[in-house]
Image 1 (tube, helix red, strand yellow):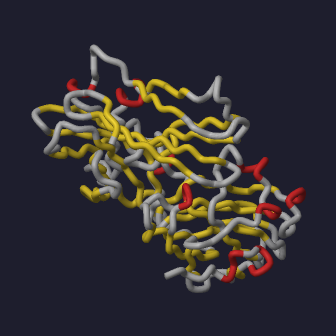
Image 2: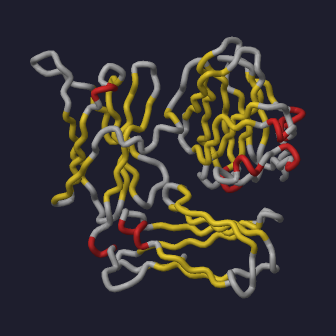
Image 3: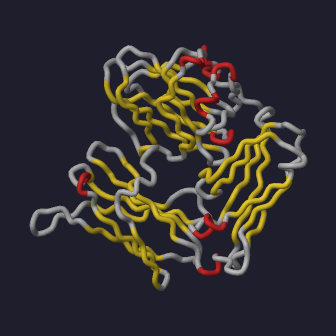
Amino acid sequence: MLMAQVANNSISSRSQLILDQSPTNSSTNNATVEWQCVNRKLTNKCLVYHNDQWFTFTPPAKGKYYINLSAGKCKDTKGIQAIVIEGNPCEVNTYKILKCVSQIRYRDSFIEIDSMEAGTTYLVNIDGFLGDYCDFSIQFGSNPVGVSVEGRAMKKLDLSSTSEAGVEKLSWKLPFNLKDSIVSFTVYRRPDHRRMADLRTVMPLEINAKREYQPDYSFADTIQARRPCGYQIAGNMKDKRQIVLDERFVKASDAHQNQNGEFKISFNLEYQDKSKLQVLLIDALRDAVLWKRTFAFSEILTRNQSFYVGDEVRKGIANFKIVVIDLKTRRKREMLYFVDNGGKLNSR
């Protein structure tokens, strides 16, 4: 059964977002792209269009505002991507990109937009990441909801870790410039075979006998399997935001280091000459793009593709996805690779 397109699939039928009204529900399922209304030159380093739709909003006063998004239900759990634009609808030469976010997968996230002008109408373009079908909600708000999309890997905490006897100990420091803004820390862990992070603990800020904030914090976590996983430390702020302040990937065991071999991915392409292609290397666990390349296909020069992922494996990444996109037909080819417990790179 085919689902009807959302009404705001067309920029001329864009949905109006009113400040602080209840979130608007929508879906990227069965949406299409109005190519004459997007400016790929401005966004080609950030995203590829697949199934977009349009929203608009007008700030009542000059200042800072938030686009609050929730992308909790996605067919392939890849999430959505978003662009905030200043300019006239479908007049692509007038577009100014205020924010371009290539992937949003948190259930509750926000885009912060500063110095917005009163009475100026802005555009929001929402698309499925790599064409994912997502049910999501969107709100134009005066307050943020959830995790900042720009709060990843802020490297604010001097986060370190040590491993011993199946126990991972994380240690970090309270940033001096944030001590009056943070209420508590939340620790998340994501094993390499899971897409969703587990909440491990919430740690309130501590005050010592001198009535000073405790500067050092630590958390010990038992790891069941000798496989890589990622940790994130989020700051829960007084203004209700949750910002990911630091993250650390615990490396795979020595068995994953493949001391005597090479971590090389090789594959062949079969396309018509001069077909414009984009190849993406993706961390399949976190759906994070590690590398991408756009080129015109040549049977002689680009049919055989190969590259090394040894540096990525040593960082603890064990699951890879190759996505090849024909930029004219929008057809995709996906290939999966993983490092097994013996330290060998295999395809699925």
